[in-house]
Image (cartoon, rainbow, N blue to C red; front, side):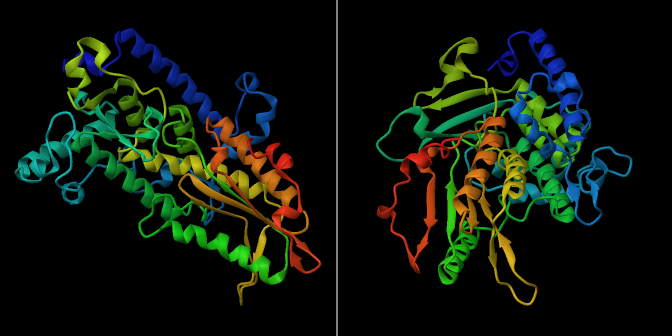
Length: 414
């Protein structure tokens, strides 16, 4: 593949995109600092204005101060520059990369890199630190091999295939180190909502289902009305635009060098599809053998799952504010604990209790749906499930005893 394949067709296109991104970044910073100008909100429909306060930088619970980039001690040196990667950290991460996996476009596997002498790792470490400081990534990082894995079932269309990226090992190691440092600072400052487990080690779907089950069982035992919506999203990784990802990272105060490095990769990346006959970039001459990813995060990349966590945290904040009737679980001796939501990556559950539980849940669903729409996300209505417990004369009312299908259709698809 020639180097021209890894960039836009014309250099002036890249320069124009970089200028537009810089202008948009200044606007996104004003959003997180609550300094929006009238001209910034002129293009935003009025119904979305109540959502803008949720994009302000989060407050650190221990200090009651809004988070700043300087609070990321694991990512930044005392002088504010990116913290250099140490050789021990590099070798540890290189050793953690799974061996025997499919390589990227270069064909160099993790097994090959692990066998190289220490002098090579010192050179690679120096290159990684230069990339962190400049934000300029090498051409070898811009070529992604895309494999489409069938999700199962009888549907053989492209939409029923999951795109997985095979990327260069060096890119995987470098971005993994930065992502681990970022996660370490999030945990230290307790920035993420407790309902946002993300991709934490040891956190399974069972731990996210448990609050929902406890809330339902408590309402059955105490004969309370209960309503819950099991939520599902369409293509949560492949949908959010790069600007949305960057805004979510700014909201958490992530150092700018991290998302500038991701921006450089996105601007210059070229995707080539792996087929039974070979790579499309080798089968078709010119730019027709590759395609561009316009937005979203690639499944199979290290940074992809981690960039979804800040986006989910925005919606969780909206759900917390919209909740008015949480289920109060007894938890002696500290008193009752409110339970109104639970999350696991792109799957979630919204819960409300009381006589007007359905009205309270409808408000939560509408506001979170509005935020999803603002972020460019969409509910998969056919996979959303409504759970409702209604008590009549001391017994649970049967579903066939009430007619609410028409009522649900008016708000579930928001």
